[in-house]
Length: 268
Image (cartoon, rainbow, N blue to C red; front, side):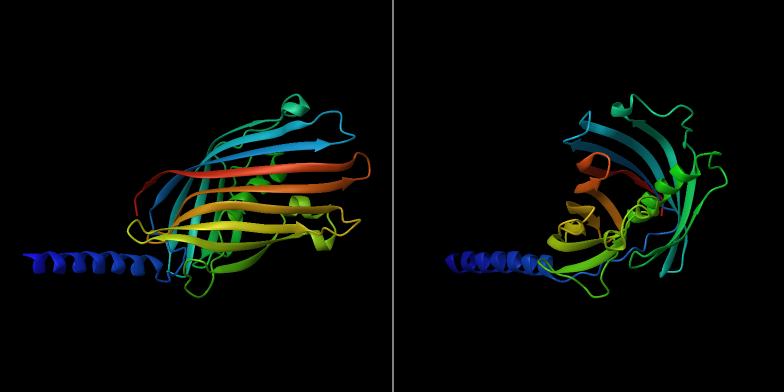
C-alpha cells in the first residue's frame, strides 16, 4: 500500500509539472475569428485635464459607447469586420455640455479589413453617417481600428515582449510635429492560462519626446486579456498621461483612460 501511495504522489506531481510546462509553452497570437460571430462591447473613455493657467481643471469628457462587431467573411489571412454603434453617451462637463447640434452616431457602421496579425486596412464609414458628423465619425472609426493589437510573427512565451509603433489619430496628428505623431508600444506576455485559452498582456509605451521644448510627451500603461483560442479580446484597459505645451495656456496635463469590456459573444 505504501508503494502504491508513493506512485500516486509521483503521478500527481508529474501531472502538475506537465500542466505547468503546458501553461508556459509558447503560443501563437492571431486574429482569425469565425465568420458569423457577433461580439458586443462596451468602451468607456474618460479624459481629465489640468493646467496652471487654465480656468478649470478636472473631467473634460466622458464617453460610454456600446458597439457590435460582426465577422462578415474571412480567408484565414484577412477578415472583414463590420462594427455598428448601438448607443453612445458623451458628456463634456467643462464645456457646459455638448456643442449645440451635435449629431447622434447611433446606428453608424464602419467596415474594415483585419489581417491575421492585426494590421487594419480598408477602413470605410457607412453611408448612414449623419451629415455634418464626418470628422467626429472619422475619430470613432479610427478608434475601432486601433482596438486591434498587432501581434508578432513568431510564437511568444511568458516574459517575452514585442514592440509596435502606431500612428497618432489623424485628427490630432496635424497639430503635432513629426516626432510626436507616433506612439511606441511594448507588449509583454505576463501569464498564459492554457486551460482557459487566455493570455494576459501588459502594455507600456511612450509618445512624443521628453526633451526640452517638445510640445508633447507622455507615457502609456495598461493590461489586456486575449482569448487566443477564439481570437477574441476579452477586456483591456489603458491609461495615457500626456504633457502638452500650448502657446495660450502654457503647460497642460491630460490623462486619457480607456476601458474596453466584452459583454457577449454569439455565433461563429
